[in-house]
Length: 471
Image 1: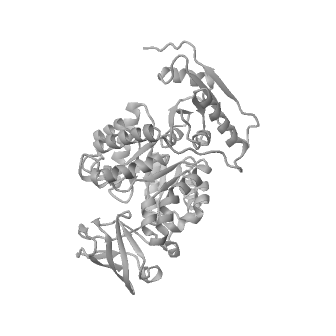
Image 2: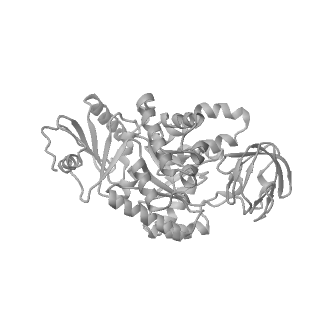
Image 3: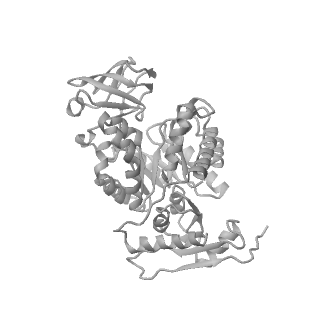
């Protein structure tokens, strides 16, 4: 599989045996949501993943999503809302015992909500039309229903007007916890501006963790005009297309359906950064052990777009069959890539010389049907090659475990961690030892190129002669 699968852990999937089986079934990394569960529970999950990583000998990234400026409703009974039901949002209220009265512990309604706006709940699965706004109370009608639980996300179109900080005091405590446990990747929700990333990066600097990757989750239409600069300053994008589309008014949605995904992918890959996509909830996999046709169509479409990876949420966090879900999704990924192929991208006029060099390296490798082996310190060279979506596998060698884990979420890449800085000979021996190459196969070797340091770049093309594999 070229497309990576990121599974969200939750009550259904946090025990070590389930995590182990999901890795065996095809998971490349795990997302943990810091909003739910205790730090003790997170500690056990992180320890379990690291133990499995050691046991299987493969790097497994942990992507921790903090609360950030995400707005959430307060405490209320769980309910299933149907289209046409009437709701009242009470802002500045923390708790409600009525399933039709939604508590929102922020005093914001009259500042940014107007009649006719859409209010999204539960990661965009529930859509409510705002009928009337009265002081700190909004009356609304459910357009699309679904299950609503306490602490569910609430998304508003004009949130940028609120000037909410990208990290909270609670986030700072959670980040301290995560840094002590050597977590590799932070996901920052609802990024609206490139400066959000600078604030988070500056906070991480106090821990001396310059190699912790920061992924920007884009889930609000307000962020789209700044997406290119956000991609440039982040270590990758997590794209919540469904949230954005559901927030748009009707006349905007056809354009979004046609261009939104492609625009996001191109802007991100242009900066040689990975882009993951949040999979809209596949209801059939939450409750059942099989996937329904309409869910299959959604999943197949996302895979064919060539996102680096797909992020599965409720299906594995609270679904009844998390391991079986991953097996089904892995089969869909394999079949989609085999039957439909994947989108490819080419050089653009303003691409710098080192990007063009890597495109030339890829062209050479494909011309002679060669695998690609690259040494990289931070992952930039692998990303500069993989942005073009090569036909053959790319092996990313690194002596940094954190980089190896980061490479695990990148399309078409197999990370190989080695304890010493490898040369071409060491890379070849490691490929042979791991049985990743055979006699007669061609390999293109290269080193990472940092043009501000090196004025020369080398590559080696080798046709393997007789390969002796030790038992």
